[in-house]
Length: 348
Image 1 (cartoon, rainbow, N blue to C red):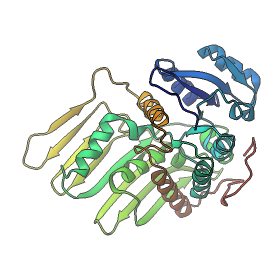
Image 2: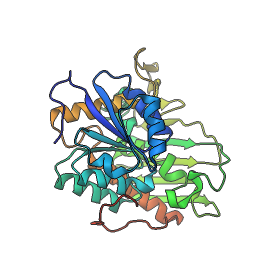
Image 3: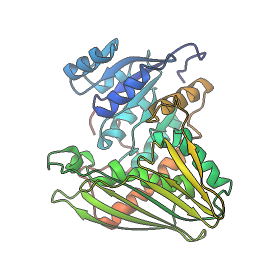
């Protein structure tokens, strides 16, 4: 596995895709002295060069394959739409690259399982870019819950909604790009519930679908029968929701204000006691992308094939839950890969 030998030797990153999240992540990497953005790839050389010029990246490729074949790259960050994650991450893993792949990890659990198997076959690091799990305050919250600060968990609530409106041609409305609220936004509430309770036993869901067949407004009810716990989750691309979360147990409650997946604070209410507020360090990166990058680079230097903060089994479990939600609401994507063992090519 390609790694950097010491913390003083920068990890060399390749960036696959040049959209908004790729820009945000690359901007954070440029602030980290132990990271070096060595190359970028896009569908066209012009877009790659524009991105490279913006961030002073030495190499710009007009296709994914050249990036995947570059032995001067330690890890590729896949920031393409989730409809392309299976193809893009698979191409890189098969070429011997380590991979950090944006969420939702893939379109479905079968594709996720395929990537995990490929990473293990080629002995490469693979991680879903669920940056929420790397956030120090989210980690503190999860630790409090595990340690029994609020007793046995009974309910989890979380929401993520954008007001829109989004035109039919927008990627969030495009079935060919895995559009809809669920995979783009709902993955955060679902992952939050998984972090605290694991994979649910039961999944129920209802949604308003667009004329194109993607979900616009979705409600999810997850159940853990052996624990007596429920999660009520919503996601929307037609309504700007509070984007808050809470977890309630038999001895108390934790409330997370707006931006629950990159919190600056949260409040612990223990029954019969004064509230306790937990606040992010004053110099902590606000959006957690740097925490995510730091965890990836720590894993590479340690020779780890997956992160204990974002384990592959957890990413696969989340994809199974998202599959179950889509089954309940009737959302299916054109050309969706549902079988493993597909050939790794440039295009999905």
